[in-house]
Amino acid sequence: MERVYNFSAGPSMLPETVLKKASEQMLCYEDSGMSVMEMSHRSPVYEKIITDAESLLRQVMNIPDNYKVLFLQGGASTQFASVPLNLLRKSKKADYILSGQFSTKAYKEAQKYGDIAVAGSSKDANFSFVPKTDKNSFRADADYVHICFNNTIYGTKFPYIPDTGDIPLVADMSSCILSEPIDVSRFGVIYAGAQKNMSAAGLTVVIIREDLLGFAREDTPTMLDYKVMADNGSMYNTPPTYCIYIAKLVYEWILSLGGLEKMKALNEKKAKLLYDYLDSQDYYTAPVEKESRSMMNVTFVTGDADLDKKFASQASDAGLKNLKGHRSVGGMRASIYNAMPYEGVEKLVAFMKEFAQNNPKY
Ligand SMILES: *Cc1c(COP(=O)(O)O)cnc(C)c1O
Image 1: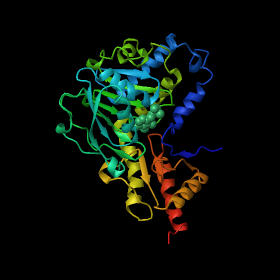
Image 2: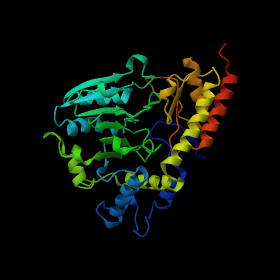
Image 3: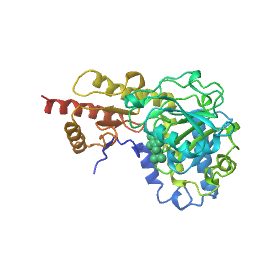
Image 4: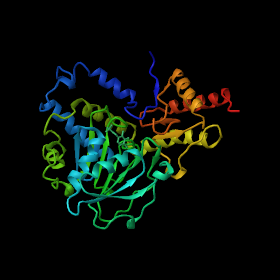
C-alpha cells in the first residue's frame, strides 16, 4: 500500500528519509551486529548515539552552553508535574497563561504543589487567541511563568515571547519545537514530547538553564528530579533508546535541509497555502484570530457538524488521514508538522475545493 498524507496531531508523520534510514539499520546498526533496540544503553556504540543526538540538537537549536539537554520519558504531561516540583524553589508561586487545554492541564497539576495564579486566559473566547501579557501581568516574586507556546488543539501559537523580566519562562513546545529558530536564551526551561516534530512517542526533551537545577522539593520522585537526570547524562535509568536514535536521524535530516531557518521557510510556505485558501472563500471558516494562527496546526470548520464529519471521512478515503478536529473542538484540524510535504497540503487544498463544490450548504 502507498503511504498516505497523515495530518494527525501526534503521533504524526516522520520524514520518509528518516524512516528509510531506520529500516536499513533495523536489523543491524553499523557494525554492531544488532538493532539499536537491542543494545545496552551503556555500550560504547549507544553512548555515541545519545552523545551525537545531544550535540546535533544543540547545533540545530543553537542551544547556549549554560543549558542542559535531557532525554526523558513520560510525555509532556509528566512535565506538568516535574516543572512545579523542580522550580517552585523560593516563593512557591508560579503564574500560568491559559491559552488552551494543555496549558490548563499544566496549571491544574501545578496547583497541587504551590500558589499558582492565572496571568492571562482566553478561555472565555474558546481559546481562539493567545492572551496578551506584559511585565505587569506577572507577580514579581513568582518562581516561574509557564506558557504553552503552540496550542495543538485550537491551532494557535504565541505571536510573541512574554517579557517576564528576571522570572524564568517555562514553555511547553511539544507541537512547535524544531519548526523555526527560537532564541533559547529567552527561556528558563523548554520541554517537548517528541511525537509531534521530533521522533516516536516515548521521548520527552527538556532544555533547562543550569542555574535552575538542584532545587527540587525533597519529596520529588527521583525520576522527576532534573538535577539527577542532568548529573547522570539522562541515564539514571534506561532512557528511551530507540526514540533517541530516531530523534538523532531527524536532527540530521533538518541539518541536511539547511537547518531551522530553512525549516521555517518550508513551514511558512505550507501554512500560507492553506491559510490563503481559507481566507479566499467562505465555505470554510478558520475560527482563530489571525495574529495567533499556528503554523503547525490549522483548524477550520464548515459550520455544519454533519458536513465536517463527511469531510473527514471522504478526505480519509482520498488518502488524507486524520483531519477530524480534536473531540473537544470539533471541525477539522490539519497538522502540518515538519515532515508533511508541500504536496500534502496542495492535495488537501484541492480536496477542500472539490468538497465545497460537491456539497453546497443551501
Ligand atoms: C501533545 C501535547 C501534550 C501532551 O503530550 P504527551 O506526550 O501525550 O504527554 C502536551 N502539550 C502539548 C502542547 C502537546 O501538543
